Length: 249
Ligand SMILES: Cc1cc2nc3c(=O)[nH]c(=O)nc-3n(C[C@H](O)[C@H](O)[C@H](O)COP(=O)(O)OP(=O)(O)OC[C@H]3O[C@@H](n4cnc5c(N)ncnc54)[C@H](O)[C@@H]3O)c2cc1C
Image (cartoon, rainbow, N blue to C red; front, top):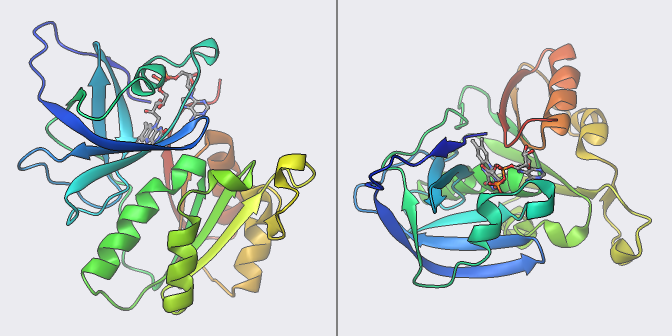
């Protein structure tokens, strides 16, 4: 987790909220104006701030897109949230600070033809950027297997984008969303995969015929999920890369 106080002079660059969309009560997409010369690699994060509080956010948009797209989960004040309650008050035209450089090494490692992307809710963000960029650059030679876990089906948010890609280009994208609370009334319409993503990963690896010789595994989002995925795939000798959005208490 990146928690930094802004310097006293408040001399960080600012940028403007172009638009936002609430996807659930606690999940929001935000589009920011991309500062001039703000370069990033797909999978990297930017650092956004408001009222002297800064946090890291992975970038969902691809570098070729006009705006910076962020997908943010609200951590309520009662649960210790500091910046996100402020981000929920933002309106179009408001400003936030943005560090001039994107950072991070959670980027595409092209050495394996199969790329297994595992994420929970907002942990899907780096993969969105990577895949959008891959398609934009008309690259070939890789297949992306995306396993996304959430408690409720409405938390997937990028599911239509991935399902459409899977339909139009099944050789490029395979998407498996899975919900961990199938018995909850809210999920009663769900007829897809169930179980925590870290609990289904080994079965998925086997049924998809993925092997350590041809597959790179990534995990992003919930730290507990990452820890478990890391143990499981490392035991199977897969190469593994992770991005933890917060620390387990
Ligand atoms: C590299 C990186 C990329 C990130 N990308 C994203 C992103 O794309 N989208 C996003 O929503 N967040 C992302 N985060 C997390 C983000 O930086 C903030 O920590 C988060 O938005 C909460 O901010 P806050 O100030 O409200 O609470 P904080 O002061 O950051 O945290 C308050 C408490 O909530 C916990 N916490 C933080 N996030 C969550 C969460 N999602 N669910 C449950 N508990 C949480 C913290 O561990 C802490 O105990 C990223 C973090 C890192 C390190």
